[in-house]
Length: 123
Ligand SMILES: [Zn+2]
Ligand SMILES: [Zn+2]
Ligand SMILES: [Zn+2]
Image 1 (spheres, protein in one colour):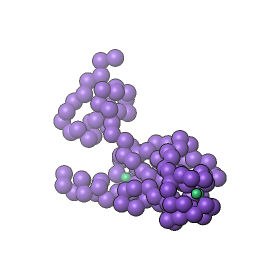
Image 2 (cartoon, protein in one colour):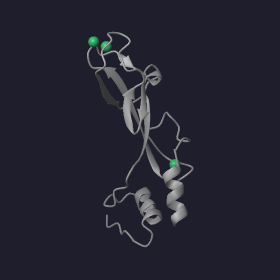
Image 3 (cartoon, helix red, strand yellow):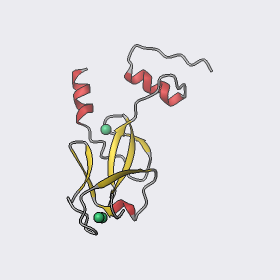
């Protein structure tokens, strides 16, 4: 059990394809969401190259290359396109399964992750 959690924690889910919204990670079996973010200058609105540092999404450079300001905003985008992908920051989040949701795949998931807890679907 201990090993199981350690492996899960270390997983970067880096085999998930970039062009899907959700996928099961082939390394750890978790359902993972690809979340894309764009960093913009708060002043002039130009897109800035972003990165993740200590779990936060920040611009790579401290000052805007267009106007020199240091204020920025982070936008979550629904669908990545090939223009934005140069700027966008990808964060892979494990989706927490909703136990009350009784579709087949969720039930399978519950069976795996909740061990002995048996969830019965009444619908
Ligand atoms: Zn994984
Ligand atoms: Zn400015
Ligand atoms: Zn700017």
